Length: 251
Image (cartoon, rainbow, N blue to C red):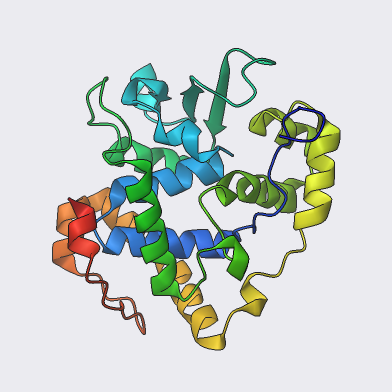
């Protein structure tokens, strides 16, 4: 909230997550048997969503191609309680990446209509977030110039900007009420250098997991989560650090 009593969006202190880091986080999540957490990462990033918008969502809010009796197409998330609902009462996010939509079909499609997309509390989501970034050698707090779950929305918008430079389209997709607000935000964050500030070891690890993410996605779509774990995908040079709480988080 700003001094005039209005809502400031998005938070300008948040670090942007580059697409390569998002892919690496996705890959680690799949290897650890966390497909729904991996799906939430994609949902927040590709849908330009705030954490509370996807953490509070139910299966009935996620409209997949199969729900429309289609074999392919975009995925949509109906947003029930948006931060800007007083300006736009009914809102949705749109995810156009075909592979992401296919992943949602496998990760979320079998859920019952009234099942939440998130089978755990917001605090548990943050624990998983921290564990994945720790694996990759990335800080997890704003004070240490690390990304937080709140970074997903702006990161998705920044990636869309880098790919298209189509600011009006980004504003529509991300539900920014004022294009000027989005322009100022992109000017501020588009040149952030999170990855260049990391140690060489972390950069190499992120690169390896990011490169392996496409193969992991293909295997997941073919085999499913349990089979993927059993297969124990061997990505050359990729070695998981020991995270003692991993099994506890998976419950």
